[in-house]
Length: 77
Image 1: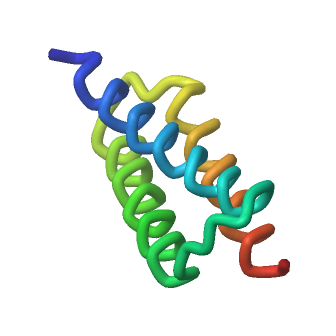
Image 2: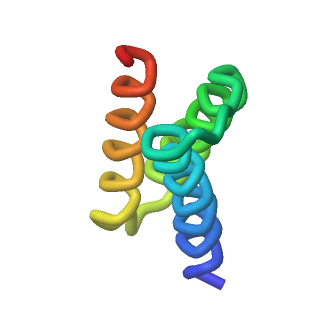
């Protein structure tokens, strides 16, 4: 059960990344509010995971950093 949190965070991040890439490189129009809310949910979930788990690994920090980078680049576009 320890890997369940990591698996759900990674799955959510992959879905968010696919949406981000589809917005950037195709004609797919996605409301920016949906992307921003989904990014904020992932940031909050990852922050709580890092805060409350004693064995937070590099994966959680990388997901957090990449999500912040995607959200900032989306907002600056």
